[in-house]
Image (tube, rainbow, N blue to C red; front, side, top):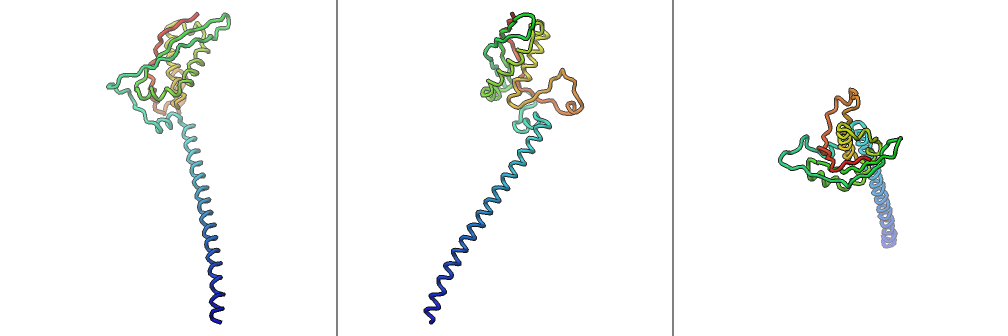
Length: 196
């Protein structure tokens, strides 16, 4: 009887070990699933926090992501990025007027000029949108050209996440408290300027 009793006892541990492996497998799957869900929730909260920070101060969030120097390094020569000439219909209502304008951007850092190249379609679009809302009278005088250059300098960095406030707008208290955002586009030069 002892042999029969021993053979009856052996299959029982095999069943228990199978159950044990199944239970361990289920626990591992649950732990991995819970860990994955926790990770996804954590990433979502981090993304929402970054989005909230961007809404409160978009340029401050971008500045934290990619630190930029507060001033141009005088040891580095500026980089000049010529854009293809723009030919655009102007916003004059009384006559069909157009402008042909060549623009060259003076950028403080050659590395930033390289960073701008992938954004060139968005940069050209921004310049075209500015030009198409101008009238011939607005572009005739020196003051109009200087205002256009300031608008272009402000808008060409926007596709890269740098938001420069318009200095001509009335600032509210919140804007006054923020530190000014550094614009790597130092100047906008016109290589040609024809209005007809």
